[in-house]
Image (cartoon, protein in one colour):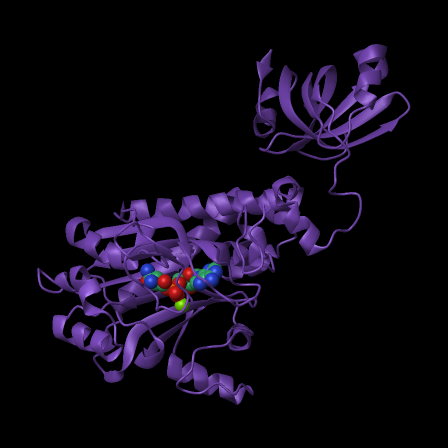
Length: 431
Ligand code: 4AD
Ligand code: MG
């Protein structure tokens, strides 16, 4: 007899197999016991019939509680009611542990209770489905980049300087070397990587001391930064669109069951797999003001603006060519208008907000140095970054995807805290 995973069950119809996992749910009626069994790869109904299992084992099985751990032996057969699904007729059962009274699932729980029990909450089907989609999104991004000749180039987390401004830095004392900071984005290091490898990306945790208590902000989240030599603003935007559409297609193909569990509107997701929208920051502001927003030409989009902007758009929208004052120092100035930079934000539809920030980078030594001086940055700390503009500088661009923002949108999960195993937010660090 073979130990198999639930996901492999269709290959074993008519065979006696072994499953190892947990009891998601249990119900009995007379001589029948229905166990909804899960093993991490899927759920399957296991049916124990007293005359077949024997009285002693059947009585033991009746004591199973939610989340008890078990090993089930049984025969795989088609599910009597659900077309294309299977169930297991239990022939033997051994209990690893009868779980204590499980705290989750008997009644509606508040968000705070669930977050405090995150170590258990991740077992529930919705959380399981989100984590599976997260895995697929992660994998699809790496796959796309690999196919497009990007090499993974891991950037450091402990850094001597800031990438995205100093207001959200987590600071620590680094032995006798002075202050160090947790990375906000690996971008500046990736810019060194392209001069060696041409196209690079990193994928890892980044940190921002965000005081904002919103549904879109974490203090620790996962970012994929991609950077490419000889890719300019327009191609940078095109690459982002291709990548996101590849992720959508992969999730629709591989995670249909999980999207169903989450009651995700799949048609909306399919509709997003079409040419993305594109407008300048100027145009976006004009449009938003015509819709009643009080945004100005010198300001960033607020959360409400992002919702308003994409309200009638089934596809994500790029907002590009931003006023330089409200964007990072490294963005290249727009050759058509020196007050603007060649940056772009990608805004997801359905109210999920910004999922990507990207730009062409300033590759001219003098212009970059001047911009850094204007911003009163500590030039000495960034010598290494400036060096790149002295030794074989080239036009280059890149972008950063917030993994959890992307997973929120793709899985249709309202709050970002459910898209990472252990969310870190201003008022939460346990468990
Ligand atoms: O727009 P951001 O700040 O861009 C950068 O950090 C660039 N250095 C990236 C690059 O060009 N390589 O952040 C990128 C993305 C945002 O679009 C958003 O999806 C996500 O990171 N993000 C957050 N996600 C969760 N919680 C937060 N506090 C986030 N801040 C940004
Ligand atoms: Mg941004």
